[in-house]
Image (cartoon, rainbow, N blue to C red; front, side, top):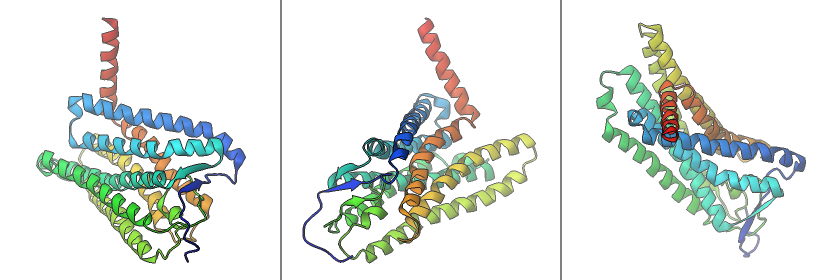
Length: 314
């Protein structure tokens, strides 16, 4: 885009669903409930795993980190979306937009690698059960978690800094629900071709490559499950894998469609709905997917509830 003038944009306007004012009024209450349920569900998982010693194993510690990420995404995005839905538009400073984009990228990339690490954990547990304590020991777990968070921080720092190094000289209306990279980049008054190549390559490395590795892990897991002698063992393994695969498909599928699409690939409204899928639905559904289908999590929750009841009784 050719630079129009030298005036610098100091704030942006998030348009949200301004084309559908009646829809905003109806959706506000739904989004508020979704936000509160998301915070509560992920907070419960974090607390249960923190307090229950029997859950201090890689499978649940990975899940605890995933809940921290999901809470982070919700806190960064949902309050802004609720303001937009209640006022139709929202003004956000360039600093605020920078911060929101930074944390969306940080938590998003971290979740990509955490889901990959969880697939590796399931692969080791099901395909190599006898060697599992050695393959996924405390040191390996710490390395995988650290790598996930450091990758998120690195990508967020490089990409957000690069985006906001471009001049923004008007217009300043972002036709989106929050400060996500693609819609903000459309307002830059400079040639962004080099950045788009970097962003496309980065998305391949942080989204598609981990996703393919996850699929490869699950192909081997599937063969291992089919060889199990007992029906109970197969059902338990399938249950664990189904939870993770559901989360992976929902998150990776919508995230890749958002960041790998060409500029003219989808309408702005379609892009907003796809962004909602991985920023709103995934954090909401992950606690339900992992806790309701997991007997150990349910037992730990019941045990904590009984302790609370006993304390109040005595």
